[in-house]
Amino acid sequence: MDWTIWQLADSALPTGSFAHSFGLEAAWHQGEVDAASLPVFVRDVIAQAGRGALPFVTAAHEAIEVTRDIEAFDTIDDACDAFLRGVVSNRASRIQGRAWLVTMERAFPRPGVLALCRHVRARSLARHHAPLFGATLRALDVDLTTTQRLFMFGVCRGTVSAAVRLGLIGTTDAQRLIGGSADDVDRTLTRRSRLGTAEAAQTAPLIELWQAGHDRLYSRLFQS
Image (cartoon, rainbow, N blue to C red; front, side, top):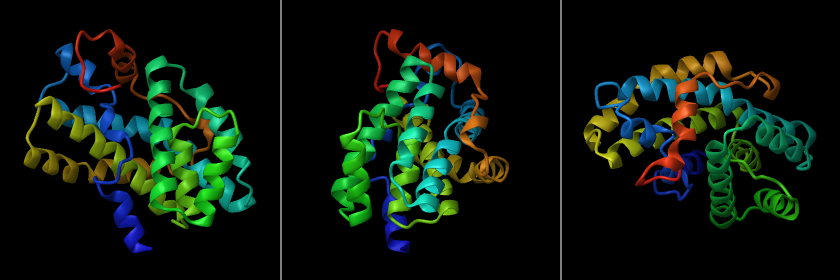
């Protein structure tokens, strides 16, 4: 199991996250974020993911674990679709979710994973990233606590990686920032790990606004 977790945490796993900046690119273009303010931006992204995305990760993982019924995923995916009202953030979640689905199906062709992937493909679902992440890791027999930590690590790493490619910071500064974000992730998990989907909320409205304006950028590296 440890080997699977390391593989899931490896940046070489093609999850689709590196196509997204979590609103950072738009904020940078507008002069709202620079190298000095980047740690605050990353902290806000972590907090927002903990309140807005993590509940769907948790719900999908627990629903399949408790009911052993992969159809329980459908309701959670629909709830996530209703929650993500912003066009850009909704589209980004769908794109990343579908990239994640393909990767899981091809990289981990185990019976539970394949059954889930076949079910999702057979339904007219949005296939959002957060619920798919929770459901597929449950299919891989990864426990809930580890699943939540992996998800939050991926959010942090993805945001910092976007900053590197935008030229805000260098690679060693990025690693220092990721290491320094551990307390923020732990604090978020302590507060948010038991939230249900009905308690999901957006806690960083500026990030949501920056992300919503991403499509209006003259030039862009990322999809969101």
